[in-house]
Length: 552
Ligand code: BES
Ligand code: ZN
Image (tube, rainbow, N blue to C red; front, side):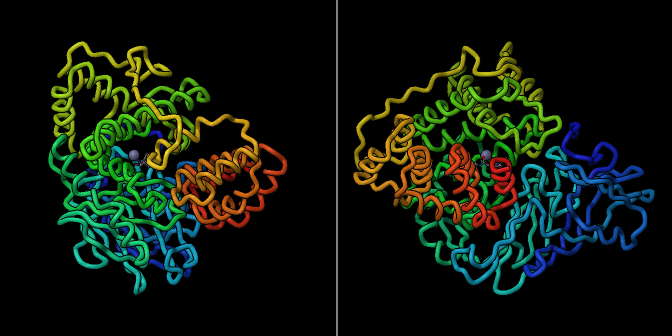
């Protein structure tokens, strides 16, 4: 049963949507999707309340009477209340999106690799599906969906679903609305295995396929731990560099930033992460955003387990140790309430609750249970958890109750409801090298760079740069870390690269700390404003919101 969700106006306990049929045309000229959503109802009361945000509702059920659009809330959008006739089985909403839709990014040809054609992609998590589909936009309400997408030639539409035939899609498993996704661009496909492949712009496809060549092995590793992969295909879509995230676990088709294509597979744990969501998140989902850790904590833990199978324990422990260190640093600056796994998001956008806490504290809780009960028992428990709750959305309380069935007396209250790490938290050990060598992995370089003193002089930066060529690094993680240090040190030879990086890359994780560092001095603030003037039009709404808050 859907839980009460403070981030949705919908009324699933009275009337509930169970299937969505989309018929949409893509207009790049108007920056609009236009068409209809036919919503099938599994339960129908007197009214049906849907979530919308900046949608223009043209007609409902072929008439313009019988519905009302409420006033917009900053985070939640507007409720669309539809009067249902007795016995209603479905409703049809004809609508169009607005060019500012928070869940869509419309790219100019210049922002793509090929520079010839525009590009469109959606990002629905957490509550942006409502900006392109009128829907009960709560993770506790699962729907199946089908879609017909009319896109201009020669562009290819793709969705988080099975391709029935070009432009026609179907997802037969029920998913929360935040997993409905669409991308349209000049895209080509390359197979990696029978069920895995990569979609990308033609000029990116070859290197993307090489970078992600281990994908099938990752699926097999996850299956051997947690049971069959249930979604048919597992493909990756490489987006243009303005994609605001690292990755997004859209079913059948993970969306990924091109910034993980480092040339040496050093950043492919992102694929392990998004793939892991095929169990933790897409199969078993948090029923409200308060329990987001059920998605990301399990996923971060499973990401490490997949990584261990493919690349060895040393490598997975290294990444676990690094992220635990980062969590401890981050928590020093977080209010106590945000250090709990079950977070209070009252009055906030759920995107604001995204810190390392649900990810890494969540993963450490599972690691703690693994150590306490042993791998064999705990792996079997996780597998039974996925089978038991498959295709359901659950709360932390349901997790606790299911845990107690297998491990009587187990108490994880402190993890869920107290700030910081409990005294029983595992300590992940890893010995990092201290003198750089060309044999170092990306993660070792990052660890070493982050450990440099805060007061590096431009002269010392220059020495390091001459020795290791950081300013020209083709590895986005290393480049971003180096550019951060360049800002702090006032190291001018890196400024041109900094500007180029910020104008090209819109990944929030990189962009946000760089602007934060820039605004710390008057000179930096002026530069930040000049760069942002050029960069902002190319950023996704998610990244724009983050940087606007810094430069306001
Ligand atoms: N599902 C998340 C992305 C997300 C979280 C979108 C919250 C909107 C709201 C995805 O699985 C994720 O965690 N991506 C990470 C990369 C990952 C390797 C840690 C990212 O994009 O940084
Ligand atoms: Zn994730």
